[in-house]
Amino acid sequence: QVQLVESGGGLVQAGGSLRLSCAASGSAFNRAVMGWYRQAPGEQRELVATIARGGMTNYAHSVKGRFTISRDNAKNTVYLQMNSLKPEDTAVYYCNTGGFTLNAVGTYWGKGTLVTVSS
Image (cartoon, one colour):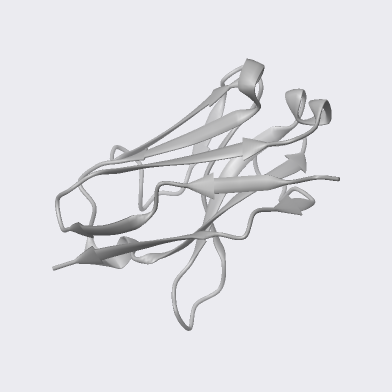
């Protein structure tokens, strides 16, 4: 059974930092792209960042230079380091995997972790 377990969300003031983690079960994810998406209230879910097994990355324009995605293939874990957070970063952040290109949404989703940035 596929499982993605996110952690690291919370409440932070604008300008602060948070680090999200997502652990994936199953060896199939060793070859898959892993990534983060987010959904703010009343908005559609959007791509934040994705990373291929070899380390190639893709970022949404709104987070470039502030967020960094990384992965530990041995642990099937992906991280999202979020710096210089803004109130508009407030959203539920979802881990995603199962796709094989940086722009393709994968099949599997985590339950999400809430990030709230206060002004």
